Image (cartoon, rainbow, N blue to C red; front, top):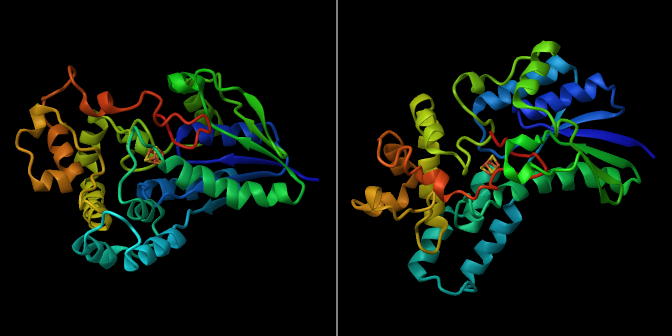
Length: 314
Ligand code: SF4
């Protein structure tokens, strides 16, 4: 029986500090795994290459694959086995509904919608499940023990406040959160002491690292992303067009359609179909500024705060 110490890395500061601590503690059979959502900023991939070189450990990348689910949905559409679909909607969906190999996009095409702060299925489908299925289960099936090291800090969010430092999941799997009591300052200090640069996205004003943008992004973050990385907004707008075509109602926006009269009085078809574009326009205005942060107001306060630490909570 082998005991594996496996750190889930995201490219963010907390999982990096967890790697540094695991090395300092000389954890045996230490392995690093990254779940690639396909919706990461390019600097995340660059940073993971840097981190791997800097710590002298390979980082295994896992990806979710939804080609089976998409093919099954195609077959149902072709056979008329999906109630509520008109012939026109079915033809429109069949024209775009093909696996692209991008996990985030394929998940949304399959579901016919984007995840949201209130329906945050992305973390489970794109991060938790691939790591469990592709990394943990093979080791557990071989009779090994897995300690899953997670970069969770209790002061990140209310939902993480009581995250246990250690817990047995069962079947030989244990969750270990060694930086649960650390502050953000301690995390950056660990980088400094060990001579490791934090992800450069932090220096670009990003408060979280990972999906670009995250469905839990707030108004200021969205404004910053639109200013510095307009290509990411363009990409998501294109995804909104594709996912809308794959959806029964031909409408799927990255952020939920909102009803705030301050920004919906001029709602039109493009608003429905290009939600992120309209939200970016709004993020640049003073409307709903401090008094009414629409994205934050619509967000579940527990969002992006999975106790698995798979998404950077910012
Ligand atoms: S970072 Fe945000 S968008 Fe990406 S998987 Fe996590 S919750 Fe979902």
